[in-house]
Structure formats: structure tokens, C-alpha cells
Length: 80
Image (cartoon, rainbow, N blue to C red; front, side, top):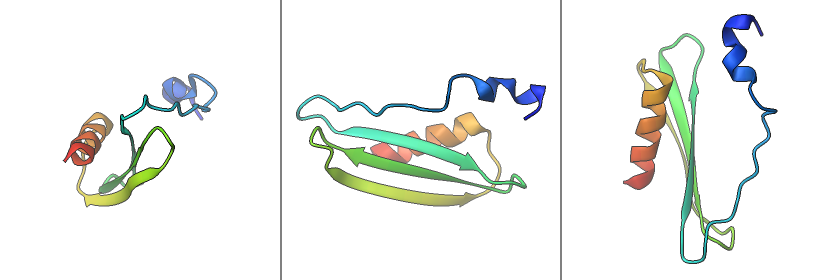
């Protein structure tokens, strides 16, 4: 990885999922920008405090957007 991607090297890449409080559903969203820049995808999972999967989904979109917008679209999809 070259220096232009130094911001991607922050941290060690390991994140720990934490349980939501009782009676709360936690939704995690992640996006990927595919090489070539003509499509992107998102994945989401919703779990409760017992780690029961409520819903999981992956969606592929055709088009080009900035990564921050792709994340926002993922959050919107998760809430709808």
C-alpha cells in the first residue's frame, strides 16, 4: 500500500462487535467499491441483544458514487 492510502492503515483492522442493550436492535452496514468504479455494494445485518439475526442483506448497485454516499445509502436502506 502506498503513502496515498495511509489513512487506510489507521488501527489494526480488528473491531469488536458489542451487544446492544435489551429490547434494542443493532444494525451494522458496510460498503464496498468495486474495481473500475462502475458499481458498489453494501451489506447489512440486524441483530438483537441475544445475537439473533433479525435480517441480513446484500445489495449491488450499478453506478459511481463517493464512498461516504454509498455508506449513507446503506444506512437509508437499513432503516427502510
